Image (tube, rainbow, N blue to C red; front, side, top):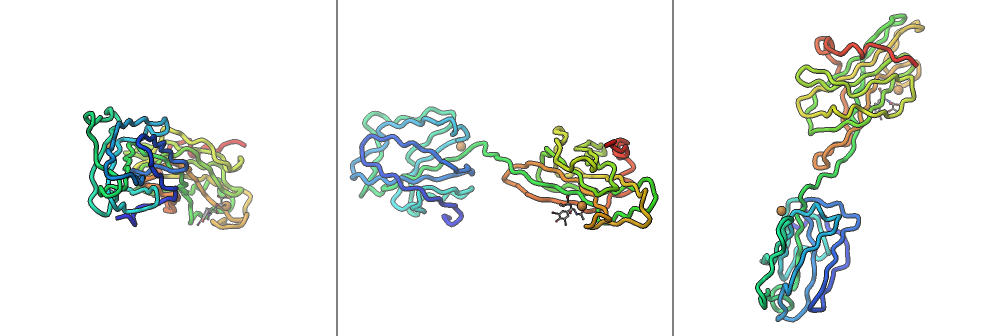
Length: 295
Ligand code: IYT
Ligand code: CU
Ligand code: CU
């Protein structure tokens, strides 16, 4: 189904001589799993292909797993290349596989003086080269925000914890940076992954220090079934009335941001958690989460 393909404009290539070299480069093309390239072969019926074919991969092509060359009369698209996801749209009419290159196999040479009939009148005016990429795993970054929506800080009370936790139910993420945010009453904010009851620190910082992104604990990755949790420790000292979550500087906020990367196939650019963590769960939070960071 060609409409599933993203076609990109690139001038078609015409081959006029018996011997030719095709230099296939894909500037600015992020390889998806399958890409198709089209070549028009206008020569007369009696041309044969391939006279001799070699596949010389460029350094940037080392993700290519295999390539299939089809010959046909009517390609599904006449723009010169398109990405097809898993769709194998090549030709409207019947296509013939003419050649295959595999990553770890040397190109097959046809016997001497043997070739495929191609060109005008042969039913094979077009070549469509299908490239299957092997390990295509660009990563996409995203933000996971844990925030409290219901914390109330009592005036004069030395310690109030804002606890937030959610079950993680998406594809694996790899946190690499974290940022904390409170207003003036926040003493320390910590973020954790809980797996099989074990708490692992992703990051811990004073929100009174510059609220930049700091490096996260790289060993802690997050996958389906884990729980993400954050605690903000506040002090109500100096206040004469209750402090609520809100937008002004007299209000408070409890935010733990996690910057992560994840496989682009499942990329989710933003996720958040606003659930109040249960007392029972937070009974097991490591003691460090309660230790204010001196500024
Ligand atoms: C109530 C609260 O905690 N607000 C935070 C987090 C937040 C950010 C965004 C909540 C929502 C958002 O759409 I964007 I809903 C808050 O405002 N944090 C600030 C802003 O992100 C600038 C901060 O500095 O972290
Ligand atoms: Cu393959
Ligand atoms: Cu704020």
